[in-house]
Amino acid sequence: MELSLTPEIAELRDRYRQFIDDDIMPLERDPSVYDEHENLDIGHLEGVRRKAKAAELWAPQMPRKRGGLGLSIAEIAPCYEEMNRSIFGPAVFNCAAPDDGNMLALNKIASQAQQERWLQPIIDGRVRSAFVMTEPAPGAGSDPHLMRTNAVKHGDVWIVHGEKWFITGADVAQHFILIARTSEDKRKGLTAFLFDRDQSGWEIVRRIPTMGPEEHGGHCELRFEGLEIPDQNRLLEVGDGLKVTQIRLGTARLTHCMRWLGLAKRAVEIACGYVGQRDSFEIKLSQHEGVQWMLGEVAMAIEIGRLLTMKAAYRLDQGDFARKEVSMAKIQVADTLHKAVDTSIQLCGALGYSKDTVLEWIYRYARQAKLVDGASEVHKMVLSRFLLEEGDAFWHWS
Ligand SMILES: Cc1cc2nc3c(=O)[nH]c(=O)nc-3n(C[C@H](O)[C@H](O)[C@H](O)COP(=O)(O)OP(=O)(O)OC[C@H]3O[C@@H](n4cnc5c(N)ncnc54)[C@H](O)[C@@H]3O)c2cc1C
Image (tube, rainbow, N blue to C red; front, side, top):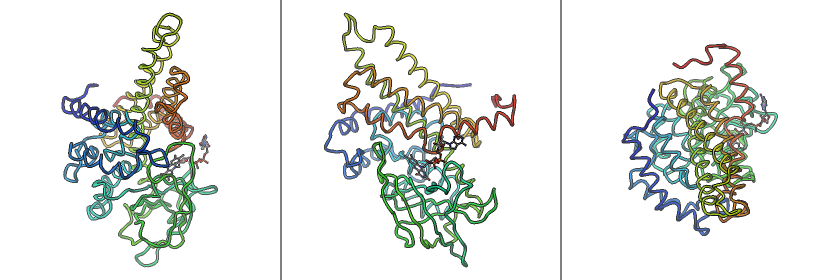
């Protein structure tokens, strides 16, 4: 069992850190570069993205032949953690949700022709993308079997009707992965498709206002009224929609964890800076045992999250779905992000509650972590199903 980084990955991680320090932190501190949804304004994003490409830090999760760095899932983990030391980091390196998860999925399952048409422009940063699955009640939420959006085949074309919501990035996306019902079969009833923003037969009803700062393109409600998708734009086979979802969400959940760990560490970094400077009752805050226990607990929670994330990454790299491992990491890291930022706000006192640091930004953003890509309760349900089915084998190592 090897738990250290190779010298190449350690060096790459350091280069991400340096880039964040030199090129992104100054932007983060500049109120004029924020858009109305509290993210880096797209105009500023383009400039710093060009720099990231020139520095050979672009799309580390994508193959070299397509313009990425060709890293494995375990190798991107320390890099993603480092890049999300800044709230702007992942988008700058083309590693932000939802493009990140969409690219990873298309790279794995799309045909060569589909990769040229749909994946390459996302990797190049020429277009953005979205993953379209969740529906308002009574449609599919936690339970995908409730899906009502349907695609009916007429000759070589599928015609789509239905409603979706909370589709991240839809307001700026050009390429969409859509999950729709194609039969009533319980296991094989869903199918995945690709469509382009410029096609007719669908619309964005609204950008849903949320409590947090938002990814570029927000979280949108979509209506489909006769969108026509040629059969060649179907992903995998008819009836493979759940499989596509599992492949798409499995890795995407884990890359969320990698980024959230970076945000959690950043929160603690801010708190450590404050308690190391601030006097209270004749000593520094950091010298109070109560403060030390708070920091120690958070540090341990982050490290548990990193270990779970690395174990899941390793299993994904082995070709396993790693459902148990990904679910555990997702529950743990979502909770840890909350704990880290809540503790850090507490330790920074009134400053923590202010907008003088990014703590309040992270605090509001963090709330989605327990919901996106499956609520924590659903992941716990998955874990208990495995436990009840596997018994003692649940704890196997290999
Ligand atoms: C910020 C944000 C971004 C998102 N981006 C996307 C996106 O890009 N694409 C997309 O398709 N979807 C997206 N979603 C939707 C997300 O995947 C769903 O919110 C999630 O799957 C839960 O579905 P739901 O909201 O319908 O909750 P529901 O299914 O209505 O569940 C509500 C609550 O009930 C509880 N619950 C549900 N099932 C169980 C159970 N079996 N056992 C115990 N408790 C349970 C949980 O606490 C859950 O939070 C996004 C959501 C958010 C908040």
